[in-house]
Image (cartoon, rainbow, N blue to C red; front, side, top):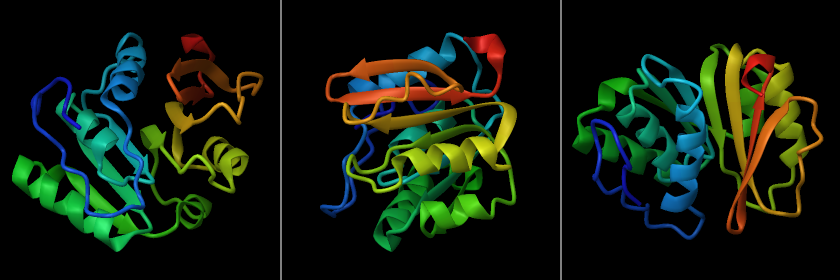
Length: 183
């Protein structure tokens, strides 16, 4: 995994030494960020990286100008790994971390974000529920975007707040927003 563009361009993101991870491929990440960048800027945005794993998506957002990223993962090892990477990249002041279940965090958010990325395991038991928690809760800014990675077993194209669905090989990215101006 590598940072595609921005201030950290070309830096490698090593994966944590765990088998509990399916990192977003460079191809998928490039497609997701290209879709966003064609419509929005990252400068000074706040990002929530759910199921953070290696931190791949959040570090790409920082490289592109996000001012703050909250990395959330239930695995202590993943969060410790992300904190070490942030130190080595010199961006520790731009991150915060939490070790907890995604559902637990979303049920009691205390801050809002411009972009929320979620890359859960493909067999995640609460795929539809996480969409409702994000879009109906108080965690996403009114003009914010929620990007959910999933496989073809799920089709959210008919969801009233789904603006785009983009396939990238086996992975599909569904883009949700309450802002009707981006569709």
